[in-house]
Structures are given as structure tokens and as C-alpha cells.
Amino acid sequence: MENWRKTEEKELLELGGHLLALVTWAVIAAVLGLLVGLVGVSFHLAVELATEARQAHPWLLLLLPLAGLAIVGLYHACGVREDKGTNLVLSAVRGEAPLALRTAPLIFLGSTLTHLCGGSSGREGAALQIGGSIASGLGRRLGFQAEDQRVLVVCGMAAAFSALFGTPLTAAIFALEVVHVGVMHYAALFPALLSSLTAFLLAQALGVSPTAYAVTHIPALSPLVLVQATVLGVLCALAAILFYQAMHGAHDLYHYLFKNPYLIAAAGGALVVLLSVLEGSGDYNGVGGHVITAAVAGNALPGAFLLKILFTALTLGAGFKGGEIVPSFFVGATFGCTVGPLLGLPASFSAAAGIVGVFCGVTNCPLSSVFLAYELFGGAGLPLFAGVCAVSYLISGYGGLYSAQEIVYSKSRPQKRV
Image (cartoon, rainbow, N blue to C red; front, side):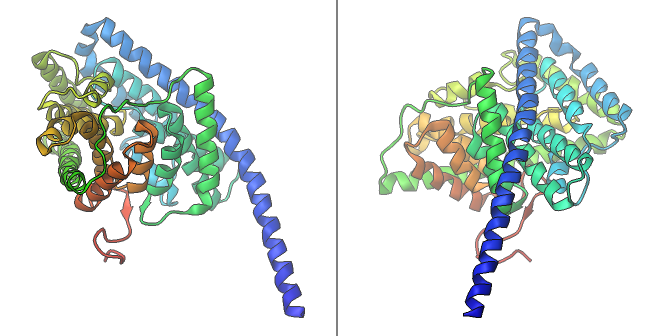
């Protein structure tokens, strides 16, 4: 009887502790979601205005080398000699390195300049850095314990991603999954999800529409379609490997050829300008959202994914700012639209599957990829999209966009990696 009473008292105390944690994190996550969401919306608008300005004044492309010099100079003036990008955010979540609050305005301005002058980059990777640095800076200044600061960084990442892209479930799960692949700290699930949803609602209220694509042809589930989708998943993994290897290779080659970061930025900007002039369409500068939409509708040039990989690697490898996620969407959509029909699959479905398949391969985040398919394309065909993601995760190896990412478990056996 005495033991039963002690057990009951212990359970009541634990319940009280959990309720207190729920209320505390609800307040913190909601406030952080509003703050980071507001910055995320501002960043979205800044990039949109920069893109419109570049399209209205094509000569701005010629200023890309100067923009690169300005970005390097801005970072050096703020005491940042080596910018590790999103890798630094992942290290901050693990408590390995501090994340300075000044990262937020630096990546904000640097990404806006990159888009204004036609560099090939996205926004969501930059958003992860913006949200993470704001949350980390606030946590330190308000005296949060180290473990709670790590949760705050996850919340900031989720809120910024959600505000910018309009996929709150994907944003929350991605912020949890990307740091330690195979191990998720579920203690951060509630605050991350609440921050993400808060930022999403704020963005909607301020007129930022969520990203979504209309898939026109989704095949019915059958043994043949499963085989075709499996092969598509393998090919998406190979495209993902090509993408992240090109990203790392361009960075290493720049630093091998030039020791000065100003020379790297100028050379990279000049190369992108030259390629843009030779290519002529402008489809590979900036985000290229219209190309993704066209691919999901079933229209893409066969070599578009290769050109986007080249443009993005030359841009971000030279030190320009932005993100790698939307470029991976571009690569996946145009690649899937090209190879899917060769396998007997509809072009529209294959482009959509290519988006989530390549995203999964470069980020090593299969759960996030399945949620992404649901939020981008709706529930139709979700088992097939999930299958493509699962295959791509298995085949894409242990590399990825983020060198600081830890893949804890083997991809082929239920055991930890040695």
C-alpha cells in the first residue's frame, strides 16, 4: 500500500512537471514563432523585391562579382572570417558551437544581394540560419540553460522555414531530423511544432501564400508502378549525389585555386555572369520557381537539372549566400520530369516525386520528405512518394549538403555506424 502511494505521488509530480513544461514552452514557442515568423516574412518580401528588381533591370546581373565582394567585406567587417552556413546551426543544436545573433542580419543582407544580382540560390537554407541565430542569441541573453537553448534553436529553424515556405509540419520535423539522422529529440517536438504553426499563421495573415504544386497525373498503385517508382527513387538518389558532390567540389576547387576570399567571390560571380549570358534565358538565376512549376505541369528541358547544379555550385561555392533546398527542388523537378516518362511514369508525377526524392537524398531526412510531399502535393499518391523517398534515402549514401550532419545509424542495417 505504501509503495502504491509513493508511486502515485511520483506520477502526480511528473504530471505536474509535464503540465508546467507544456505551459512554459507554449508561451516561449508562440512568442518565438511570432518574432522569427515576422523576420521570415520580411526576408521573403526582400527576396521577392530583389528578384523583381533584377527581372526589371537585367543589367544588375553584371554587378554579381561586386555583390560577392560586398558580401565578403560585410562578413569580415562583422568579424566572421569563415562562414560555415547551415552547418553552424546544426552544430549549435548539438551544443558544439555558439551561434551569434549577428548571423541573422548578415545572411539576410547577403542572400538579398545574391538574389538581386542573379546568383543561383534558394531561401530556406538561409532561413534556417536566420531563425536559428535569432533563437540562439535570445536564449543566451535571457539566461536559458544550454539544453533549453538547443531546443530554442530547433524552434527558430522550424519557424523561419515555415514562414518562408508555408509547410509547417515539414519545417518542424526537418528541424528535428536534420541534426542527428536516426535520433530525434522528441522533447523539442511540441515547441518546434507550435513555433512552426505560429509562424505559418502569421505569414498567412501577412499575405504570404504557402508553396504548393498541382500534380495532374498520379498513377494508381500497382506492382508495375511500384517497380517504376523504385527505379525512379534510385535515379533521384544518383541525382542527389551529383548535386551535393558538385556543391562540395566547387567550394574545394575555388579554395584550391584562390586563397583570398575576395578573389573567390569575384571569380565565382564572373563565372555565373558569363554562363548566364551564354545561356540567355535567365531561368537558372535566382530561385527559378517558374521552372519548377512548369516541370510539375509536365514541361522541362532535358538538361535543365545539370545547368541548375552548375549554376548553384558556382554561386554558393564562391561564398554567395542563400539556400540549397529550393535549388534541389529545381533539380529534382526537372530531372524527374525528364527521366520519369522514360520509365513509363507520367511526367507531372515524376517531377513531383523528383522534388521529394532529391530533397531526401541531399538532406538524408526521409520523414521530412514524406511530410513535404503531403504539404506540397496533397494526400493523393502519398504511398508512392514515400516509396521514392525511402529508396532515395537508402541509395544516396552518407554524404549530403551538410557536412556537420550526423547519420547515427546504418542505412542498410539496424545498427549504429562504426
